Image (cartoon, rainbow, N blue to C red; front, side, top):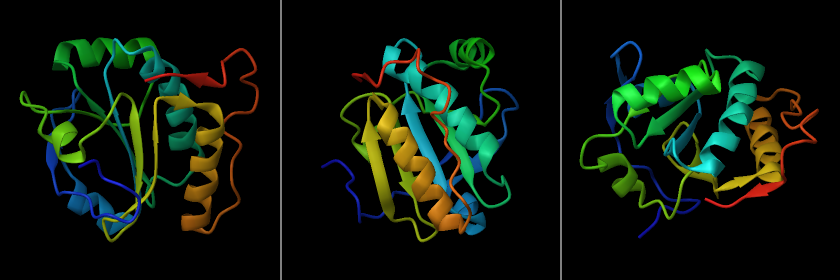
Length: 164
């Protein structure tokens, strides 16, 4: 059954594609909420979403918000994708058996999830939707008690919707 808003996320720890460092969801949640984007580099919706997630990552304090990609690709493919997309947030490699993707029971890529500090899913979106990116930024700002940043400003050339 897919994780839905109000459900608890499963714990996991994965290695990032660039540094090979271990990242634990449990440890990240101790610092604050987590935005998790499970994606596949060959997916057009995933490619479209990444710059918006990078804007989100740059907009809010890293000490209080974690933004991660979880790649359904090899480390080599993921490193190439990171270079091409320009993301600077950590991108973790899902295990060979896609354990995290299966635990979250994602219906498509990207699946983007906002997780509260207690591990509860607060918000989620599947595929790419520009209004959803704006809503995610508002939700993050609310959690962090900050003014929201308009992460979709100046992106008129990007379609409002790309299916996952």
